[in-house]
Image 1 (cartoon, helix red, strand yellow):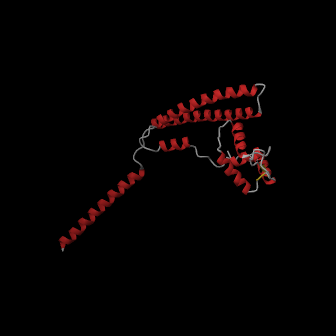
Image 2 (cartoon, one colour; image 1 turned 60 degrees about the vertical axis):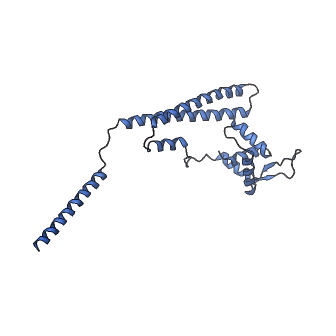
Image 3 (cartoon, helix red, strand yellow; image 1 turned 180 degrees about the horizontal axis):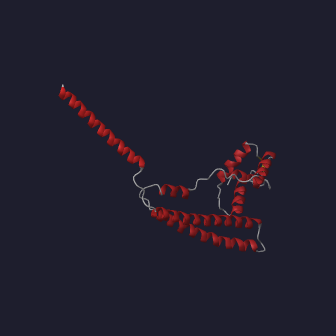
Length: 219
């Protein structure tokens, strides 16, 4: 999630100060991607440098500095709403990297790694399902807000991701079982060729030594 664009989207509604932006961001995403105030103000400073936000001329009644969008910032967030999220760059997934290294590292019990991860993911999925029930009840109640709907959508996205991970782990386990059942391959052809070449060189050296010895004896 781009923090920069998230803050711009919030500022498109009204002027806000840093701590307020953090609270609004976390409320609308259910705290799934927590921010700290320092991160918010660092991002605001960059946006101000790039001409996308500006500080209000005066602080509010409590002395807090409010930020608002500039026309350039409004154009940026409007473009974001209209543009699909770029999926060309594959994000680094620690689990994928972990298993890719595990299957290529001697001594690692890969099935155990898969099983441990599946247990953890299923536990996480159960927790998310309970959260979804709570979010659905809150959203359906008379006092449900748009923030409740936003949180419900976030939870459902996390549930789909967890379910997908479980299916992928099942696939990995099946792949490992199929690989273990395959007959072991014979010595690689490159190794055989190298051994044959070494044998040839040894025989040629012996032949050369024999010829030299014979010529010396005739002299």
